[in-house]
Image (cartoon, rainbow, N blue to C red; front, side, top):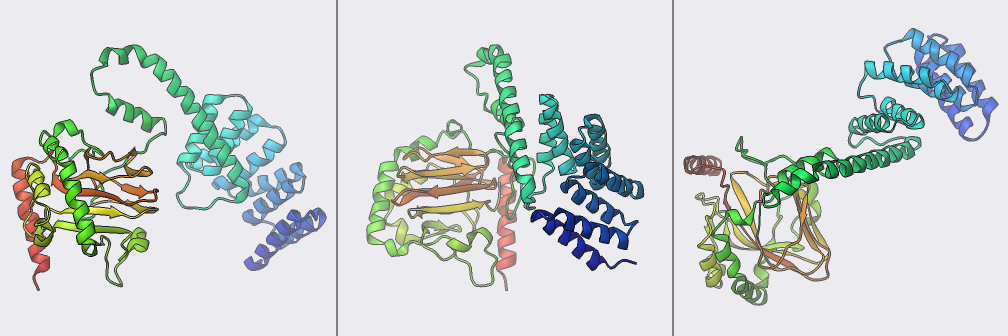
Length: 423
């Protein structure tokens, strides 16, 4: 029985020799490996690929056909055969071989990729785009590709994007008459549906880090018009900002790192912000507990908040705070604790170059214009400016919960807190 390490060494030596232009030496390594393992399908297939690279396509086909004969259920050997058939200009045979490989494994990335390339060569644009799309959809996340495949992958991405642009233009023309009948109707859900289908947006689901309330729609940003009390809070923006500026001047030391975990706690994406004032907070309410020394300095802010249906759970909510982000600082993508609540941002100090993403939607903060969103959908924020950015943040009940559900979830959350806080 041939030694596996010896076989691998011979094949690696052959590949290195080919890379350095030493064709005859490479084929010598291949011949030695075949002599050691004449019926090993892996050796035969690898020898075939190396022989193809050395410029002998007919001999490469003989070797790979022998590998397929020994193991007809291996789609990798079939893709190797398709590569040889491409070199031999046998398009029909190549397509049949690729389809046989995909019958064994419909998600085989390289098979779909080569099928797309073949169909593109044949001028079958839509079929090529479908094959390329299948390849891109089956691409394992986080798995590095061999350098030789990267240009082909980039070509596939460009081809699919162009295909979807053509489709989008076609749909816009086809739907224009129907769309014109509904100029006064919100069509954002239709637009989002098509944007996802056309590859311009992703679907983001609610992913709470603690409690997930089922059958609640995952809405990234809520419409401000659906919250009648919001106008009264927004109208107090100047007063709130003035009190914030006084806090920044008189109690700047009370701004604390928003992310503050003890050693040994998993930090993941927050490693760079842990215990850092680059993202800091000054709380008016923290986990439901009033911070009197700050509240006393913000009477007009508290009067404005009286209009909001704050998410109140004894010992846990509401949380009301000023979020300060230093220049050139980014808050990495993350999700919040529970979708029983929503988060409200009241932008106070927002220099140009600041942004905010929830799911696939990116928005800019406008001073005095609230953003209401579900923070259990992946979101991130950034301040690319040279100045500080400050928003006031508070949580409210998710309006999709009924009064009974709110009461029961309040009792449940309080009970969970009591259980874990007890010694």
